[in-house]
Length: 138
Image 1: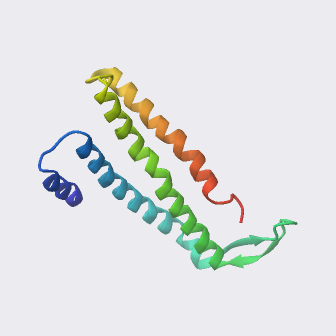
Image 2: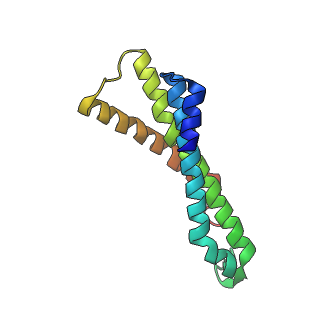
């Protein structure tokens, strides 16, 4: 709420691409921060007790590791931050481009369908990127 008010004061009531992208930064920061806190608090028990560590060749359990748990949780948080980038910035940038060339609908169901399509493009970009940032097993 406060960040949005500050952004509004800085933008001075401006609209358009700059305002849309500034709002995307505010939304991205808020969702990234809350997602990080969610991961941390939901997985804090694993940091306290450790996670199972396996031999990479035999897949046999070799023990518990708090360090591996902390590392995995940090990597998950990093992936969440990366994951959200295309989701929050693809749609406004593409929408601004469509507006510039006069192809963005003004409202109604057609605008909603275009917005959902642009958000879907962001998801299609972000999911493969996040799956490839870190190895699935380490």
